[in-house]
Image (cartoon, rainbow, N blue to C red; front, side):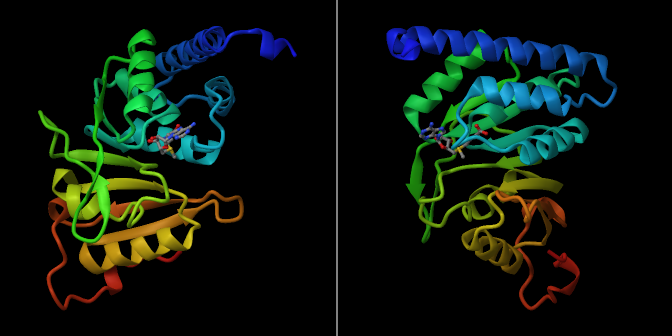
Length: 246
Ligand SMILES: C[S@@+](CC[C@H](N)C(=O)[O-])C[C@H]1O[C@@H](n2cnc3c(N)ncnc32)[C@H](O)[C@@H]1O
């Protein structure tokens, strides 16, 4: 009842203010901690304030993402923007790292961009990158302008599942942007489509992976590039040493 009396724009403003407050709490927390890890309570609070539960990463993914980001030794690439974009920016800011985030949806890009600016998350480069057809799959268009070629961590929570080829396109299109020992955090790893893409990645690249949270889906996979800068596997090489148990 009360909700229907408050105009949508005012509701948005209230939510944004609430979210900024939770983000500032995490900023302070991260400043004070050697390991730059936000507490689980703060992540839950930020998630609630963000309020996009059907589309946002779950707590397990957020914790893993912050842990990986806290120890990343280079820039971070994100596919699919939202709550994760803000948290990444805040967690790595103290160590002077930057985040490049790709967003295919123009309206969502505009909203996230505006909120990033108002929340003073200045170390995130959010790029509008529409989806386009590649060879048998769709993936983000490579954004123009400078993009690092030594990403230490990739947060892969987009594009949406109905995209042709799902998230397969990350390695064929962007492996050359990744550092030799890059870690990829892939969400929704319990899905058959994600298992299939992990299998295809193993056929084409030197990767190993482990999946977590299978008992509480959505699960995620921690994927490790094993050799020089995302190079394709040489023909005929044994898969044995690149496979990890799942
Ligand atoms: C799984 S979401 C990415 C979520 C982001 N990593 C997070 O944790 O908030 C993948 C894509 O869904 C789209 N999306 C996000 N929220 C949406 C919403 N409420 N409705 C429709 N599309 C949405 C955006 O284009 C986003 O890049």
